[in-house]
Length: 101
Image (cartoon, rainbow, N blue to C red; front, side, top):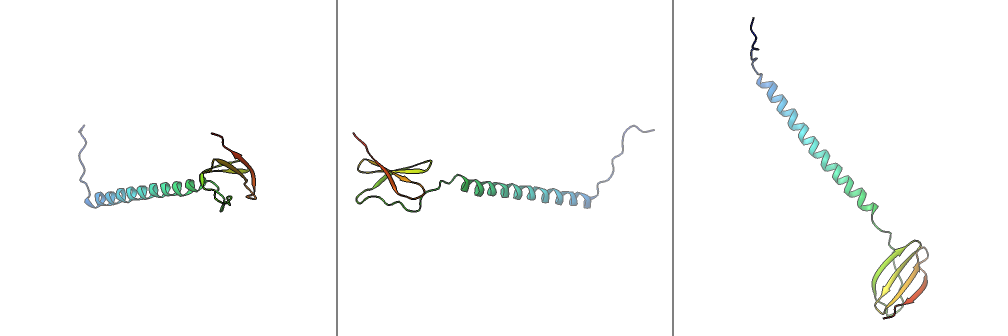
């Protein structure tokens, strides 16, 4: 009785078939990963985009220098040291605050 196993011949067609299967699996996994990354980027970039008003009507001669947004309002800091606070829904000017130096 022999204790050492005999080596069996390898079928070249089977090796070629397995090589093709591994290559197809690798390409499928890479394409799937790329699709997942693209979906994450497109879905999450829209989720973090702030809701900005379409237009803001400033008093004559005012130039905006900064913008901030709160709950139900947004504010524009102008170049002539004023903070203009607007209603978020209607766009009406609610309050004007003069900045003192």
